[in-house]
Image 1 (cartoon, rainbow, N blue to C red):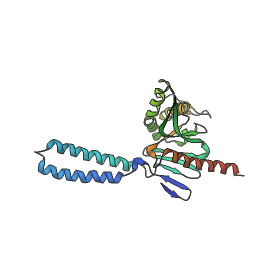
Image 2 (image 1 turned 45 degrees about the horizontal axis):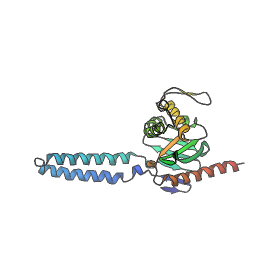
Image 3 (image 1 turned 90 degrees about the horizontal axis):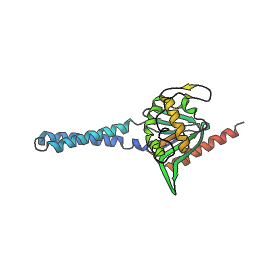
Image 4 (image 1 turned 90 degrees about the vertical axis):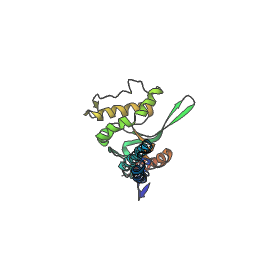
Length: 229
């Protein structure tokens, strides 16, 4: 996490050690290639397996390096999420609350691996979430849909992707993947009490620590608005 004045930049766990893993894979591949030149006929299959393992390691390292330098940026004005497929940004005044996502099953409390963000109005998603990211998040959040169906928080029919047009409060009609994401967010809000979800993989600390920090910014922004003449 990097702090500049009142701006906090959070580097995702998913990006950690990307360069180290990539370089390790490349060095290992060079060593295995050297071994292949001497022992290919004697140990073809083990060497082939080692080559594949090196390539997979390099691929994983490159995927980590492809992640944005910072996944989340908090300023006194807004909260911004960066993803390799796009970004979303909301002003604090557009956010109602931020919490860890949980669900009570009988006497057991399930703590899901997400931070939930409940918006003042779901319509904000149409203006502040990029189209590519909206399309991607539908697929990345399938585990949440499956969980909700399994625990009867949603019906199977509600969990099916809905590409019907979505009508905003001002009458604007949204179509395509963005409409599907709005329906998706609406369903998850009814089931889990949040429109937007941040996976723990996009944080570099515990969910509770991030929630406490984000709520501090949220409270400060709301207080500043009240005190503004």
